[in-house]
Image (cartoon, rainbow, N blue to C red; front, top):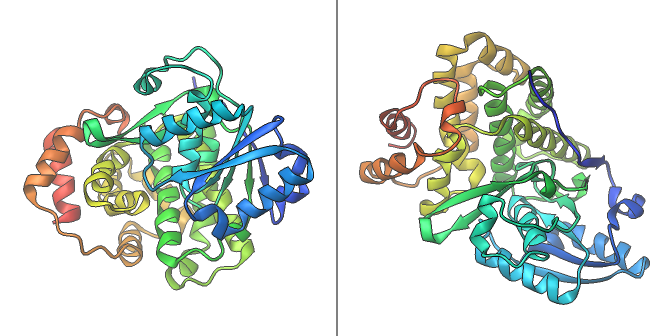
Length: 363
């Protein structure tokens, strides 16, 4: 038995925002949630502002979302949205603004302790939200997950709720074509991580597997582009679509220890999320291949590589000269082993196993 839910409408193609303006407008008064620069630099913020102005929609821009958004930023955004009288939100950016928009949509209509969101303790339905990703990685536009930074636990934590699925997402390669190469690599490998973790974990189903393989095939076509940085709008739109497929997959399956182990790298070492996943992904697949050899082969065949080639690809695309200590890795493994995604990992995992993975990948 398996279940499948994907309520997000995805509109994919060049100029999709302006050519589908009626799909973007989900109410009468809007708050745009974005990062300090990403929305404007990509051109997406300008396109959205044009559509809202042309349709006489009053709006404000909340552009205080940094990398790895904190619960405090989101709670503040919720208060601003409430005071402004917003009845819908538009998230523009990479995974940070898109994740933050989901939390803000909850806080805007619920007077709760900010931490109650992790227990699903809110009575009022979140505001409707629309997404415009400006990186091709997180797939947040097609998931019910929001990952936030919690300084009180010195880590990141996610909440999930079906009511924070985006109503609609617009995928336009014009917004990602000029990304710095390393950001394009990091985010593509984040999408790869979603596809591979979802394909191999214990919650995988025929539906999620079918979608995961298509996403792997798409990214596999552009390996050389990820190496040399040669992109055009069509390629970038394809990569956005693959990232959204990754989101669809993990919406059904969740993630595995790659994500929960990677959070510490981001929190303590400021390593971008996709890179953090990628530093661990090769060893994860190595161990998975011992228990699911046929499935790992199918996945890597779709991508167009064997396991050794895949590891070499990750190493080439993720240069990292950050130093780690065994003491740090020991501490992180003690936290990561408590994550909710440990039981769905395809192989048995102990704290010692996670420490060994950290050592093999980072020392």
